[in-house]
Length: 268
Image 1 (tube, helix red, strand yellow):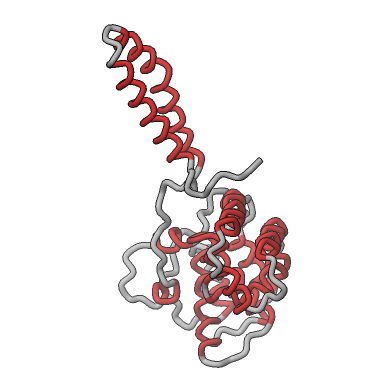
Image 2 (cartoon, rainbow, N blue to C red):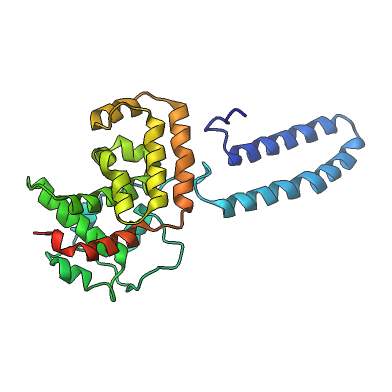
């Protein structure tokens, strides 16, 4: 069966049904008395169906082509900001944690990295949210890398996982491959496997397979993504839907990985 065009979303289908409904009413007006009978029948049959479909659409998820994606916010600028007013930014950027947390965490958002050590950040688990602690690790490692330092494999795993979470949660696998995070494409599958997210690892491998490139060199992938291929975008979009519904939470798994590899991680 041929796939539908990306623009032909369920919301648009509902709109098409509604306008068709209006056309039917206009046609019935020309029939005189039959208009009233026909109008009543249409109201009884079609309107409840449209309302039901709208309700199902609202419940079924955000990525149906209706709701706009949240504006991308620079995580590193956010962590270094002195005027953070709330803890909503990371929730907008990261994948929503809809399932119950598998490990204990606090409810305070760590809104700024202040040169804490690895152990000091880990010790914040009982008072602070784990997603914000992992974000602090990402920021510190990114600063080291921007200063020309070479990171080891364990540290690169942290950047790769956080990069995937940021980009896919904000704009799908396409955004992960479009942006600078494409540099982690060669290690993202192994990184997900290393933290125990095997379902996500399989999903990332499927995304790479869809690219159908001979090399995972960043420039090769960027050229593939620049081809304006609707079929490619649609195929990656289908993986996005699976990603959003997954029971795996890379943020929690990554935090456990950090704790188990704390001796190999350097923040300053």
